[in-house]
Figure 1 (cartoon, helix red, strand yellow):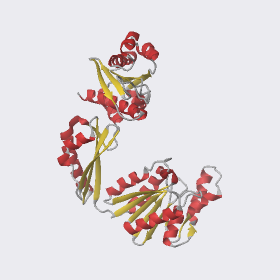
Figure 2 (tube, rainbow, N blue to C red):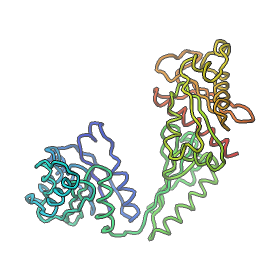
Figure 3 (cartoon, rainbow, N blue to C red):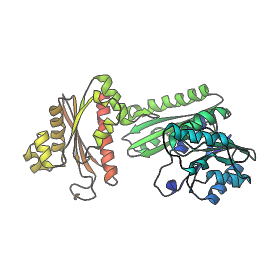
Figure 4 (cartoon, rainbow, N blue to C red):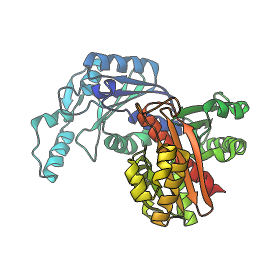
Length: 408
């Protein structure tokens, strides 16, 4: 079975919002062996929405839309489907009562426009929304199953998981397994696993790069879930054997999460000293629940005075080498380790730009120090990109050096 997923909303077209619904739906459909052929994004225009729905019905057996089921004038998905089917909108009495109860339970005033959400194209079925006011809609038209789902991700997932997914046919099973690497370019990864990168009906391997991370996605299709999992895992083991500790995790794992788990299991602690990253590394670390078990604290030593006063970086060291230098990164890492009495200290100093660079020290130059009880190692990098990308890349690279240290 083929599927087309349509995301609806002007905010997705003009960049004010990001469509996360389509990727979620695709992953879940693959588990049923249903192949998503296309993702389509369309704005809040009834004629354009109707056209993409009509085209999708002609191309796929399953069509799922998200968004445009709200109570305002720009929510036009139900009207567009009615136009495609050539029917009128009718009120679903049960949905109207559920919407009223939603507001009563919360002691909130209901706007009359909310009852718009109880409308559906004649001949279709409503899909209860247990956490919001916009019910979904299910229809069968011209041989295709059509599901209209609300746009907010939490509501979309709730309606899909309870009302749609259990009704979908099993067409075999497709599993996606993703291995994440860091610090090696996509072209080098591609060369190392070139003979393992296949693209057949039942097995596909591809790569994607972002911010220093290269992800290897394995898609395996089989008659049942166990066979698909076995095929994907077998290939994943071959790739792991080929790439070794270049791989830091898989699927939903993040670098900061993996490092956090390693620190927790080893009973080690960490402190950070940041200049050009301005606390971004600390934010990444503390985004993981339970980080207080291993992260003792951090110092954002943006000025030279802060480096001297808070981290005991010698003033003469900065005068002789500059704040962005290997000796200063070393002193920052050692200083923060000693200040917090941590097992590891990380020091980052660099030039994030867009100004402040020179021929000798260009924008993107970053020194990363990693201190432990045996001493301090310092790594020099020149990261490409704009300011935010440089700061993010530096923070992730520092985490990766700690990961590798913990792996030894």
